[in-house]
Length: 394
Image (cartoon, rainbow, N blue to C red; front, side):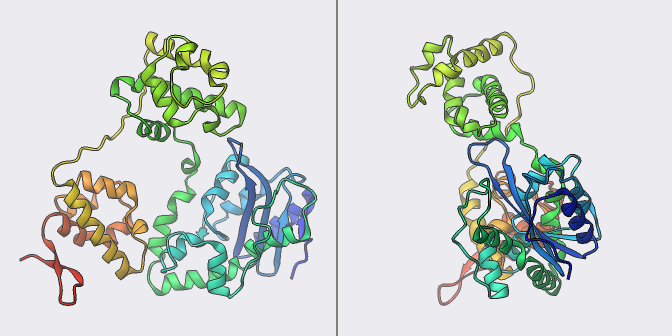
């Protein structure tokens, strides 16, 4: 057992901790951060644990150089265990230069493949596996305040205290159910730095969906989306502090010639014209003079006569299939893939297997059954006792 203080506040001790953790096969990590009123979340605490080490917390307000953490995460010989890892990793990818990650284990994703539900909380997972009930008193703590209360620190350490044990149980269960490769396939995006980049194309698509915007208004909407993002980054404030999506849509349609015209919009936030009126008009004028040529291409829904029928039958199929596999339907086929399948159903297995919007393990799990369903070779039947089943059509 290597002894470290429960809260590390100096660089040398942190460096020693990371060196010792890299000698362990499995390391657990969690973070405490605030994202309210900020564009980029602020990291205020980091907790780590391994067999024979910790749990310990690191104060990033006093330990400012976290670079060595990058080496730990890039080490293929060490499994890094996190629960619902995306937000934690987004902070590390942003805060640490050239950060890379390998050999990650997200316990929430693993649990989803083992019948625990799609998004089980760490509290419930630890209780289910370890029989330990976590404290809740400090769940809404202000992690930026110093000094940290003793109970507050213990609450934070609980988030990694049992994660190595959770990893041991879940990884063994994945191997037993032969779903390790499914889990790894679902986890791959977590390793990709581009996962944590903010997609302005996606922001544009989301904004367009918030209002009735014709294609002729897309150039101005695209410029307004980019303008809002730059302002939010400069202010380090959430983008909705500048303007919500529905307001951008109204501005794109209105294309105001002067700031006073903006006041005609219903539900306008107080002070918006004073703060941003001139800037919005500048965007309008710039768009008229030189419309942008890099407007993202949006896949607009084209529903044919069979769309509604496919939607209903596919939902029933996924519900039954996910039950047989002990998976959540949303994990088996996420919403975007669900919509893409409905709009452009595969005509044969080869077409389905070549799709890039369906990950490998889902192709394996759904495969020929889904293709048979969408090509009329599977039919829904009502058995005696009023239970449903799918049967092959001869």
